[in-house]
Image (cartoon, rainbow, N blue to C red; front, side, top):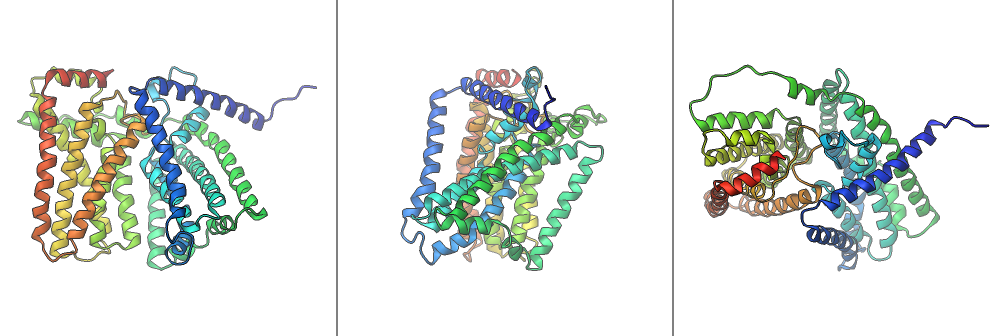
Length: 511
């Protein structure tokens, strides 16, 4: 006697079809990589780096013993909880995770929300914040546990990475579905403010660390260090089962979110603005246009909020002093450039063809775009420093000059690198969607790694100078940094004025 399929059977069948569709999309994306050999080399380097980070620390002197290794092992449960937070924030900020296929091309293909959900899960590791957290977690587990529990501990860590990523996607799709309700945006903002205030109050009341000590990650680490036991198999089974459940469950809010209209994106595209008096100079006109294209975009506003407020709240909770805060502008600037700066000309799209027909010098167009990018990075950095400085007290003259020098250096450094990459590697990207990225995922990993490395090294230099009693020294050291980055920015400006180079970029962005 035939019976109707239950909703669980239908969900599992759709998951199976979605897995096959994700494989097809991945092969499609891989077939259109501009440099296939570099793509394969990058994947190999990524795999080897991950394996080395997970194994080599266990063979270092002091690994798995008392002292520093034991301290690292004690902090491991907190790191596991922090990874969940990073996965959630990253996925929520991008509106449900990164797109495996852009919104407009995907509209003509039968791609289900489940496929979109699984594709976002696959792309989650191609995020510098996720990578740094994952590598730190694997390296800390290897060093803290030592050689004997290395296999069992790393298996648990890998399963926790999968679980944290899947849970982050479930929360992100749920928040995106709520955000698309009538008053959802207001509700999500209020909930975010309440969560931040609650964390701050717990920290001020000295109850945040004891609360973190009660999370179940302590049991995961304790049972994984003991080797292969029945309890460890129970942990592995629980993590594996929860991961599968989270992956399957994430398709439900993904469907609900897809059926609703993204009010914030449509409002930006449909709203009207009253005409203002025309500025007197060409540069002022271009600056106004570029500011509007950046500050009115939904992904830019969300990204700025996460970049500016997130590190500031972490600094506020951690009670960082000014010497430690000096490193933050570099990290915030490098993250801000990844929102659009590494492919700055994609903001124009087809409008770039119209802009090139205007009687405006090419150099003026370049200056306006670089200036707006610098404004964006400085604004995010200043908000971070203002939040972090609430508990840091009054900075000394040396700390003040080191902070100002660091802010100027990393801004010119990041703007120069972003404009250079925008000219060398343009991509046709539609940034209207909150989930879009200005470049392919692997390129974004390369960009973020290089920016994070250079800005962190620069931050360490000026952080060290802030400890000295020489206020003029940071300003003097900033001069060669500014000259070097400024010279590279000027050379990029000269290449942009070449009509052949400019035509290649404009046509590519307009495709």
